Length: 412
Ligand SMILES: [Zn+2]
Ligand SMILES: [Zn+2]
Image (tube, rainbow, N blue to C red; front, side):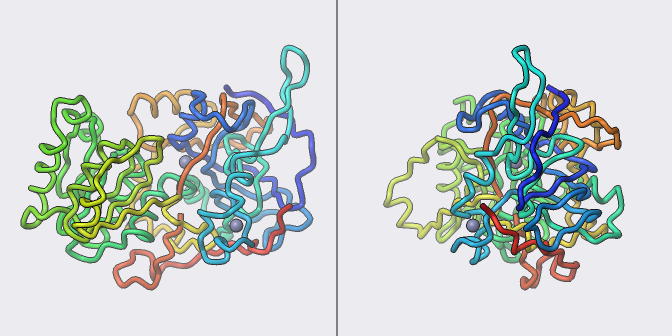
């Protein structure tokens, strides 16, 4: 629900206060609002993709000042072994910094004041004014326009996860065959990213014929083949039949070099594994409690690599995807976005549930009230980075690198 939250505590030394320009909805927010996650207790402000302007900085924050424009992503500690090795997505403090939250304010309840947690993914960004961990912020150039802010707001999680899984993890060479399971925002971002490597085959698989029929033109042009897997999902097609259908799309019918799963179904991941050619790579971003069952021999005999990735191994403070209008043209993630007014949040969420939009972006209008979105429980999520400037075929190698200057921010 939309409700006015009163911030009752000053921000901590490692935090910033932000006026949001826009925030977007990730599927994880929808799941969290429905109570799907047990370990983040409500009431809690949801949201974990946003851009805005800094209005206050904590005492230990370095490199950020009032008036700075920033885009937010997940939080990390910046000092552990993982963070020091550009493994922010695997920070040893990831759970505490992103999912434990802290009480940031209160709402009026029936029995008096009810405390509200924030800092979901280090930001809880579904509000006009939000508290965020400074480490979540990536500073934008001061000339960033309002329109660009609204576009970049969507880069904090799902899109960076899909694109990062391709740019940072798969790194397909020209002429590769790539298969992507799932036509949501993560899978479509991956598809647009994979297109940039010049694949021989780029296959997009989804169980929803409706979704596949509504794809933006840029995705339809990027994918060489669209595969409807509804029969498999409904049990009317065997795994062998789906594997055969998929492999027939690859050169020599040998199978794929890369399969990226953005769904999280064990039976589908198994299909992906078995649809790989020898020495192929299977990558999972679709987290779930499902289990993929392949024999050790199947895994060994073809020399398969199986890699999970959180946030596409993306490192927010090393954002090299060139936050500029020219890079949007090369990686047209803006075509995945639909825009709403701030107060249309519920409509936007319903449209996500109905599969009518891919990635809603809610544009804040500068109202002085400070409502925020309160879900039931809250959740966790995945992947960012795009720091592949050294790759010859990388789309952002010549784009301006945007680095957060708050790398030395101290955390409790
Ligand atoms: Zn860390
Ligand atoms: Zn997310």
